[in-house]
Length: 247
Image 1 (spheres, helix red, strand yellow):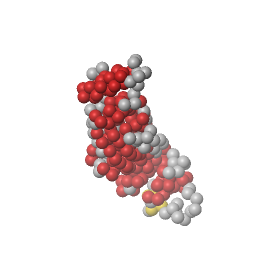
Image 2: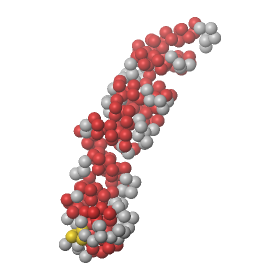
Image 3: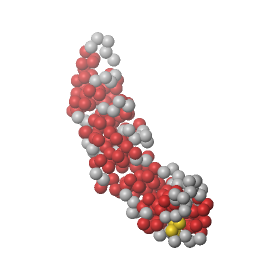
Image 4: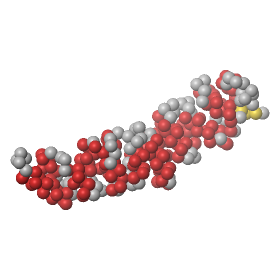
């Protein structure tokens, strides 16, 4: 017997009535289950009763909401997460109501899927990804993905420096350098000058405005590319020849 009266017949949703129907072994419809799971009155007992409902195996939406509930048993959550697509995993990983262990597992499953996503999907993910997934996205060589990542609200200065220091793609690094906020950070500029991915002409543009003392330090830094160090040495000589730049 399906329990229909909760959906449509009543203007005000009665969570207690749905839970009572579950206690009595009534098979409820999907709409009632979704409204119950979204209700602040959905108790741990209600979750327990929902887990044995046949619709849980038929409805991915219901299963995903169950995983996001703080009372969801871990075995069910692990089993369900293994079957979810990347968008549902992102929803779980971003839901602060879900258990921390469940969110982390959703992030791990999502990280496994990143390399199989299309460009458009990776761009969408980069823009919305939770904090725990950013290390995986920092290595994306597609500039469009990097541009989206730079707008992610969880992205930090530390991430910007790490991206510049570790991403081997010139286009991705230039996307960061051209950003009006992140590209001007001193840490990002320093990382760029030590990056083999940044073209020499761009690196020279970055050092042009540095003070003489900083140029001298970079010119003797073995981690800076030899060609760039030679260019810096010539720039230092030119500066020293100018009046007022003797030290």
